[in-house]
Amino acid sequence: GAHEIMIRLMQDEAQPVRNWATFGVAQSEVHSDAVTEALFARLGDADEEVRAEALIGLARRKDQRVLALVEKALSADEVSGAVVEAAAELGRPSLLPRLRELALAHPDDEAIAEALVRCGGVLQ
Image (cartoon, rainbow, N blue to C red; front, side):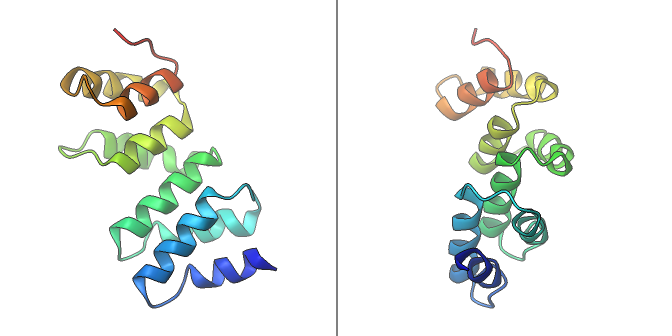
């Protein structure tokens, strides 16, 4: 079916194809083992955009294997929008301390504010 084709395209040599397919699968409502494993495999992709889409897709599925990755990425000097989105999707209270720091540093960032609330925090 369509998802098997998309999963195959997630492994395409061309970055735009992999990126598009990974985004499509990540945002889909299909939560099968095949989809989860295909997304997990893309966490090791050479391309940052593909890795970001895979991370968000796994976070949407509450895959606990990405929790440590998200925690680590939230503590980096540069925190990408994809990492903030993944944190929001995970909704884990353990992410709150770092999200609070980010919210203080970036008070106008709506994505950080949303992640904070979705992880159970309160906006100051």
